[in-house]
Amino acid sequence: MLLLSLLNPAQAYEVRDDAGRTTRFDAAPQRIVSLLPSLTETVCELGACARLVGVDRYSNWPASVRALPQVGGGLDPNIEAVVALRPDVVLVATSTRAADRLRALGLKVVALEPKTGADVRRVVHKLGQLLGAPDAGRVLRAIDAGVAAAAQSVPAGARGQRVYFEVSPAPHAAGQSSFMGELLAQLGLRNIVGPEFGPFPKLNPEAVVRADPDLIMVGEASAAALRQRPGWQGIRAVRAQRVCVFDAIERDVLIRPGPRMAEAARWMADCAARFGTLAAGAAP
Picture 1 (cartoon, rainbow, N blue to C red):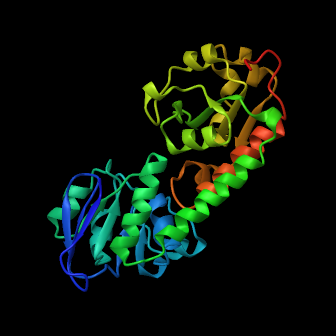
Picture 2 (tube, one colour):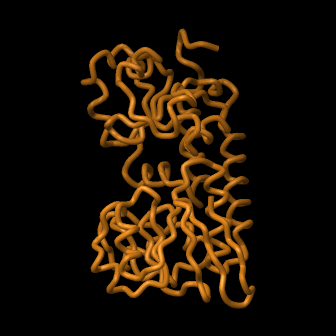
């Protein structure tokens, strides 16, 4: 959990990040390297995009960040390139292998990795505090309002559909406890991946066959191979072509827990509404 404790409101403060490490800041950071797209997007939505001096290769929104130096992948960035940018802070995922190396070179590192809706709220608030940006509440209110509007747009007959959301071709799925799973629930849809599997489990493809979802949401990278998976041609969603395929741009929005979650909810809602009613034989 991230805790921010002000030692002096005008000067120094400390941040305790998701990895349990505490970092002291004498002033709000003005040169930021972000190695996680969702954090990049949140920094920009909080009005601090101009403070970014470098990003990972996957950060691509808003468009202005595409002109920034790219320092490799978030899990294995180019350490020398990060150091050369002289950042006041490096924002990383807790799963990165680079944090200790960056700290050993004297850089300040804050590890944050939102996976649930509650995580998103916490990270938005705490990044707002870290950056000295007072309008974190505005960002969260916009997300909430957009998700609520998306939920209202789902026709009654489209609610209750049992959904399989594939995050990557492994296949990794969005579980009920992930922010994507929570969005599905808010839209009145039912996730076939139970909470016992965690937020983003790697599933045995046979488990999806047994669950027999009414609707599948998937990225282009996975879509072409669905029918080649053993038994998948018999899944009611595949058989009835109730599969929503998201292109790379849409997938970026859908899998990033941050300020564009309302847009993600709208696309999920549009997918559910596209088919109108439950597939024949689906559970009520």
